[in-house]
Image 1 (cartoon, rainbow, N blue to C red):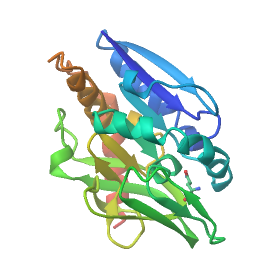
Image 2 (image 1 turned 90 degrees about the horizontal axis):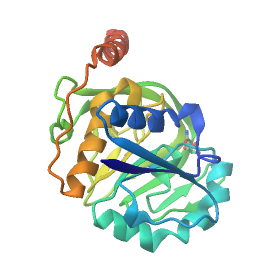
Image 3 (image 1 turned 90 degrees about the vertical axis):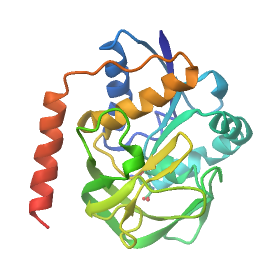
Image 4 (image 1 turned 135 degrees about the vertical axis):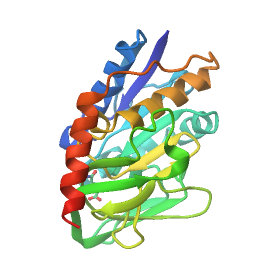
Length: 249
Ligand code: GLN
């Protein structure tokens, strides 16, 4: 079996080693005998969103987000229909923001978003920076219930607010999350997941990587379930951080 994974704008949206999420997804495929077909694509390149299984967008500075907005807008119709057809998407920070209605920078200038997610982002003067622990919403526990949290690192001026028809990934136990006010972090809409967690996110949150892979495989209708992996090291890395951070609360 092959899984088609696309890393969009790897040259523009790749803060804090977010490409490590692609490495984690590819490794967790290979360890199960699934062949990951990784495609990198950026400005002006043709893409077949319907032929993809997972789309990844990393984090980026305001400047880079401004550079890619026109190109991204031209992809809105195709991406929207692929998402409505169950395409699995992971957007990190800037990549997350661009899936929403708009991102209003500190200057007041608005960067238009795809409007696929009913979320919007307004930058504040103070950047939200630091480690984050999230208690996952029960509905997201997926195949691997050994983990009930997400752990990562945030650095954003944008504060994101959720509208109707979307749900947060969970409740912030340490750090700021979406906006530092409503104790929510991230978003889910269908198979689209947005989060402020850099790190990269997936190596220390293998359960979340497997949730994305499981959804992509289920969408294929093959009925294949993911084989359990030996996540002892990943679990140790995850738990060390969760314990260290929650001790500080
Ligand atoms: N430029 C956006 C912000 O500052 C996103 C930052 C990021 O991707 N880390 O909120």
